[in-house]
Image 1 (tube, rainbow, N blue to C red):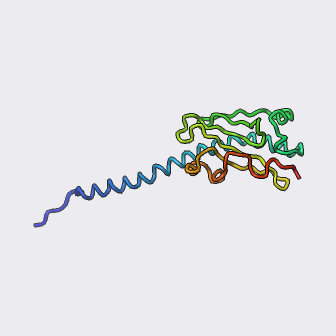
Image 2 (image 1 turned 45 degrees about the vertical axis):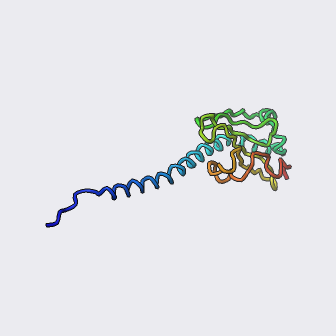
Image 3 (image 1 turned 90 degrees about the horizontal axis):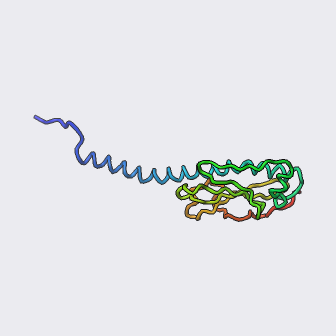
Length: 164
């Protein structure tokens, strides 16, 4: 008479544990990169108020991004947006370099701790373009949205340019 098997053997359980371990080793870093990209996207969305104010000023005044200083924009009737969130410590229109909006990440944001995400204004063919960049090391570029990769934390090519 043959005896029936009533459960899993030790080898079968070890195979299941190994498969779960392999999946976890792949999934955890991907999830971390996903949450960091979501944090940076929060910063980019908070920068939208300054983008709107600068774009409106440049369009109505017929000036350049370099002319769009904080004082000029506020003098035109805009309200200075000061936004923060659980992920973003501050969003500023950089006074020393008026062509760049800077969002500084919170100090407790893990690998994004204190990182600076930038949006640089430039005018190309009469249209305002925004170039995204970050202060992150290139090895950590998977933590930012695709449009912010491979750009450095500097003024975008083409500068402020004139409205044409």
